[in-house]
Image (cartoon, rainbow, N blue to C red; front, side, top):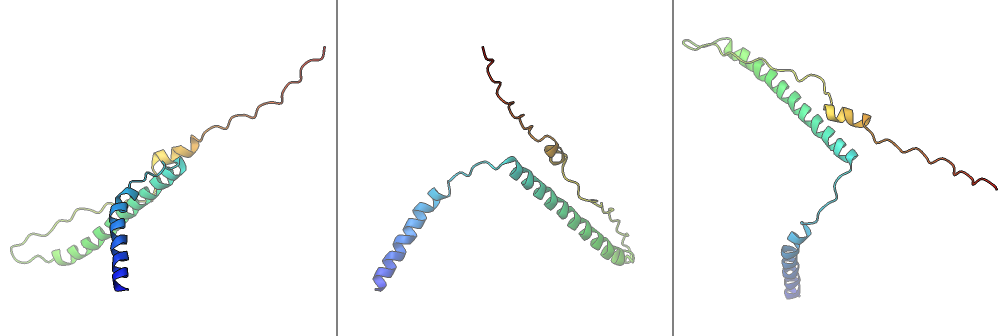
Length: 119
């Protein structure tokens, strides 16, 4: 019974090794414009959140630097720290703001067919 389990496990492992790369080469269809826009917006929000985190870290580092650097030891210079830049409020990228305004125009419905004139 152990031999059968080992053989099955070995066969499954070999199949996985050889079939894994072929399965991973499948190509997904291109995302829709709405999905691309949502992805770009999410990336922009993430980048802005990273800037906010960096700003908060900068403020915390300045606080610590001011505490310890305000009292330099003999022969040391006071440390100058660059000012922290506030990223401000989140604003979506311009191409995402302009995208909804440039929505595709829906074609007008065809008019009712004209009845042929009676003779």
